[in-house]
Image (tube, rainbow, N blue to C red; front, side, top):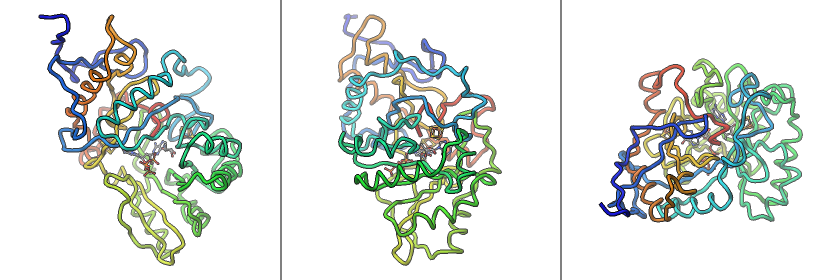
Length: 362
Ligand code: GTP
Ligand code: 5AD
Ligand code: SF4
Ligand code: SF4
């Protein structure tokens, strides 16, 4: 057997722990015969790879209870050390390889830092909007869960005032970071009374407000089904006030179901991953801030691409080899957590470790 031949079988079923304590990830091994299947890569359910979400940090200045509850993410919580994070060069190299596989959209996410991301909590947006625009950012999605200051402060659990986020959205508009989308996570009994006021506020503007069903991502937010307000009920409440018309998706696999005000006053969306799973055309891969590739928002283990990007076991890997590894990983993908969860709840064992939203970026 020649030294260039690698006969280690490619395994995703044997997940080995990596050096740090966070999430399990197997180091992908690459059979000698593997070729990078550029272009028409599809998984076991025929889904292409189109959307890559790259997380750039696991930190955040908010403590939204549905994402980073204070009791868990307190001053003792150990965030990842800088050396674990992918470098700028590693991120761009990985992005290039994914693009060679057909990825067409890259969204930078993370614990929603402002200076790097496109999905943000908006807390620094007023100050940074112009610099972001100048750096080449095209558009921005801002998370905003309430207009009522008391409810908003309670939800971010950092006593952060809503006015500053609204100023941030205004600044984004001013500098032309368009189209702006606003994400509102709806928790029944916490902020569902804000649905109509939020719609009223953004109605008549080009901003697209999207209502997201509270999801059971991770294992720290104490998710309960009775705190989920199904999108159908969100639409019902809105229809009591406004005439709405359903409209077609912008692209296949779009997470939001789109609606337009019949009087032409703008657009809203609902993201219903709990009550109407959209796994059947999920074309998203997620690269964590430390270079682990996750094939589902609800995955409990990933694939350690950083080991390949940095070299591993005394070897370095070419772009082609890394592309081959990614190709094989995607071709074996069969994740469809939300559909399974709807069918047989819960779809995971209680207590099973799952990737957290602040870590993977949403
Ligand atoms: P655009 O359509 O490009 O604006 O973006 P998007 O809807 O893909 O991205 P965004 O990050 O705004 O997604 C909105 C929210 O939908 C996320 O924050 C998640 O809460 C949810 N979401 C996005 N992708 C998935 C997914 O693959 N699975 C599930 N279950 N939820 C998702
Ligand atoms: N369920 C639904 N959406 C969530 N987000 C964070 N945690 C959850 C959850 N448990 C949202 C954020 C942000 C996006 C990245 O994901 O509010 O808009
Ligand atoms: Fe809240 Fe987003 Fe920060 Fe999570 S990452 S705590 S959802 S602002
Ligand atoms: Fe995709 Fe997983 Fe979300 Fe389903 S649950 S849409 S497979 S990320």
